[in-house]
Amino acid sequence: MKAPPPAAARERRALAAVSTGAAALSLGGSTFIVLCYVLFKELHKFSFKLVFFLALSDMFCSLFTIIGDPSNGFFCYAHDYSAHFFCVASFLWTTTIAFTLHRTVVKHKTDVEDFESVFHLYVWGTSLAMTIIRAIGSDYGRPGAWCWTEPANTGKVAHLITFYGPLWGAILYNGFTYFQVNRMLNNATKMAVGMGGSNQFDTRADRKAFNRWGYYPLILIGSWAFGTINRLYDFVNPGHKIFWLSLLDVGFGGLMGLFNSIAYGLNSSVRRAISERVDMWIPERFGRWLPTWLKPRSQQQENELVSLIVEGQR
Image (cartoon, rainbow, N blue to C red; front, side, top):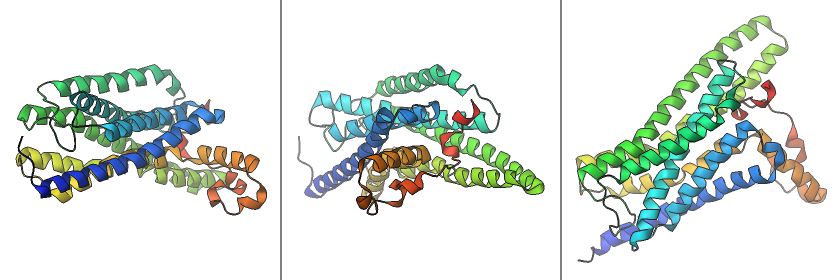
């Protein structure tokens, strides 16, 4: 096979380095959330269990992105199929969190735990189906920075349908639930203002927490907007790669797990559990050097819709 031009080889190495670095950060962040769930029994609640499976999916998505070896045909299959499966699963777990929040806050239902088996069937089953469909008409093992499909239209269409289809479906659904919950909280705020008293304070706390949750639908957009543009551009103009667009594609896409771990995982429950251990294990004289959120005084109760308010409604 003819050797690639030096410039093309340098670009591939740069893309591979950025992809690996971003995936490593995501792997560290998602692994941290997984370990928190395993080690801290007080986090073994249904709301955080969903976050655990989200972090687990991100962890394996990042791991397989890092270990992919385009020079080996077997690892090419393992890399692409596995990364595809767990990345799609990550998209879908965010929709289960959005569904749980919507059902709890808007519909005032307390039966969300009954949907756990349905969630698993939906997430893992859909991810498996998308991965199998992705394999139809695809030819792997191509040398380069990644083991993507050959530039045949069938492979590109399969990639768009099975990866970006679930992605943008999750974005639209999460945005819809945000709109619904936001409208309900606006109405509750107006009623609280009219009534005054402690209800007004509680509603403001809910609003503050929900404003943080409002950024979460933007995580998927921020992570994969450049990837979507890059795939569509490649579909329309095959063989004409834009290096800076590819760089943004792999960089932001690889950071999805890190963004998810910060937004979904580092909520008040996790911070409180960590600060309690810090208070037990680290002498007080060293505590002043720690970040504010790790200090014991940060253990104040926080009404956080990120935790889906499920436990308080049992």
